[in-house]
Structure formats: C-alpha cells, structure tokens
Image 1 (cartoon, rainbow, N blue to C red):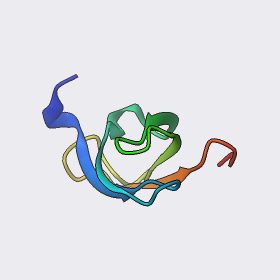
Image 2: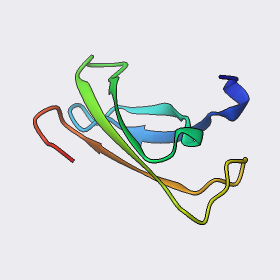
Image 3: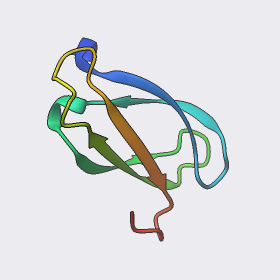
Image 4: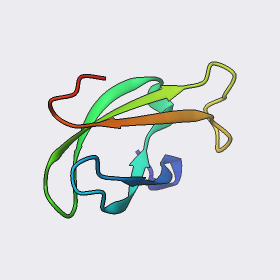
Length: 73
C-alpha cells in the first residue's frame, strides 16, 4: 500500500475531542477498523462507508463515522 493511495481527513476523538488527521484506505471498500487516539490512547471505532458512485481513484467519495469503544456503530 502506497501512502499516495490514502486519503487524509481531519477528525476529532470521541473521548477527549482532540483533533487529528486520520489516513483512510478507501480502496478496501466499506469497512470497520480501530484507531487509537494519538492524545488519550483510547480505542476509536472507525466505520468507512465508500459511495458506490465513487471510483477507486483520488476522487473516491466516502464518509467516516467515529465512535467510542462501548458504542457499536
């Protein structure tokens, strides 16, 4: 995986509200993954929803939903 294929989105931790840049691999299609907050180290659930209209190039449309460990998205 090349970093050029990753999209960067500015998000906020659902625990401490710290902003950070999240790298997203939309080429995997819609998926669920986990990312630790870079400030408070809490586990963040990340749901990536890739639009069916989006291609697998730089114009891929996707949405992110972040949740706490105890919130199942």
